[in-house]
Image (tube, rainbow, N blue to C red):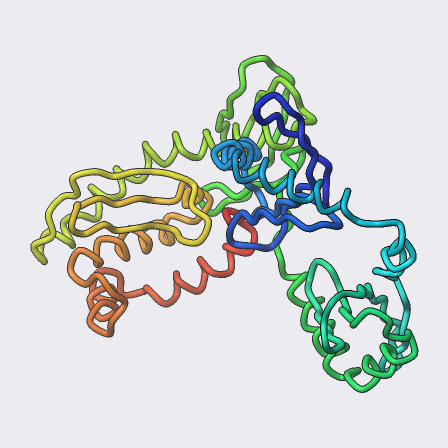
Length: 329
């Protein structure tokens, strides 16, 4: 869902649109029509987005100035053309299905069709192209559009929904579903109490705040639990001549469960590991320790990992299944 945001740079306030979506990285875009738009992976800490914009403030300010200059330079003679640039929600029947399309007229040579999970069907066409011609092209590509829409819908259904951190919501912790209880309190923290997680926050409606409090809870739990597991599993690695790591770090990561820097002898674990079952956590620990012997993912790597953890494939499958419920992108 897109929201309008503001940021103050060098004493001036700038407006932009912000959206969390199924992307891997934070993307900053400037366009003449929409100005500044920022997209970020689901669950991104908005404070980090602001920090990124501030770090790149000169580039951001310069881009705003260029857009403003370009807008002012647009003459009244092309007003009609500007009004014609887009035609939202045009419905075309393709293979018996009514499909809504967003049509944009721009400086392109051909009619192009794009289908995405978040924006639906978008058509870019050369300026002056008739709606009849665009519909003809869509009909010629009906199979591509409808098949892609069906695939995208399946992906959309399988995508995890982000936690809203409200009382009664179930949250995975060490593979078990814990009921969440949210209580208004000035002392922001989470406590584990048997089958429930109690969250104290000063604003029970502030989802980013609640997410940050939960992540702080996971980090503290990881700092206690993972070293204990490493000590428990270490005899397996010692037999292969693997030394105790110089350092173990914990942080939120967007695309992996762990990182091994073999040359520095440093292991880094994703704090969201604490939502996985014990055996899945052991798998990740074994995986990262194996990288001290084999930096890549060769056949030798997996052969050694299977020796460290014979049920590796079983818990890899379980980890992938649970990953759909755990948002750490």
